[in-house]
Image (cartoon, one colour):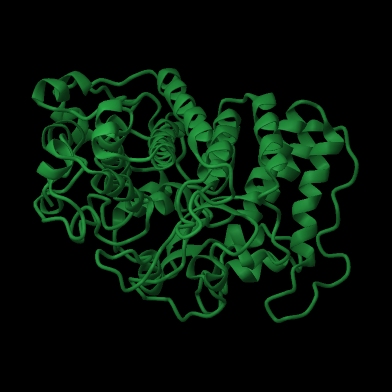
Length: 494
């Protein structure tokens, strides 16, 4: 693909490798040529540039290459870095030598050359590269006047773009710590070389928070930014990411304040049935999902969920340790995984195996939902010693689970998932919260980040037989990026 931004040939090839040559050399389909976007932008081309950033969050196959498994580019690798690394999932139902680099992540025997790291680095910096161009145009009053974009559209698109940039950087700093910080399109090689240094994590987090604050101010005051395109970033998503940023920085009052702000909007509540979050027939009609990527089959360019193809090839099997974490009769277990049929229902989007092996499936990729947010607030309340309020939220999530009709259509047996009792034991309440997050959010690519921020990864993973060491609290910078920068991008402690 010809890059439709000023950039990337220099920076992505030399500094970040964020774009396979085959991808960059293809002509855009249904988008705009580079010269149109850069020298003669229109309202439509700017909107198209924002829209073209969203797919970087998807599970669509081969967005950035052609079956580049070892480069981590066949699809976005969150499931490897989160579910497999944490021990919630094994690479496959039946162990084999296929894609051994995933096994190395699972065992923590990897090196900085592992494709899992170059893959997620590439995806995130490709997203940043794509979104910096429309941000620069949307923030330029002269361009806005020239293209005649109305203020409401400009504000919405800029809010979406700022959220997306913040999301990509949030993922980068949590995986790698200090990372290069790029806030404008790169025009030449000197720009690329100047950018080939790591900014301190604190500096990147300041930018993330600034982008999210501005996004929350700009996005429409409604549950959906667009009534006809409900997949777009919303004000609720921006506020939720502010709460998540506060959580990861242990700003407990900030978490509480932002979740309270979300609750005041009254846009979200727990679905009555747990599986409504994942049901492909209820996408954008449920009450709980705050931000998701809208996978749609039979599109050109493709927009389907390719992870379901991997499920059909035997990948991503919930581990026995994960399955054993569920309490007796918890309805969430059977909605998450059917061990006998080797199906992960919440990723397939229905309670059959119909989408297994489908490389263009309709099931959405969920990033933020209300149960997750409530448990963030519960964690913050516990840290602030408001134990009754923390327990009330944990029990709210448990009540929804036990009141969900089982997958066989019957109520859960009496006594299932009883409320956690009153307690002033902070450590005990946190243990309950950690357990609840694991089973409520299992296989949704949150687990390793949770273990990492709780500083429990070493204890949990070594107990599972993994070779986890203190250095693994950050992943290594991809070795190729260090080599291409001639060492100006430095390595973590590996």
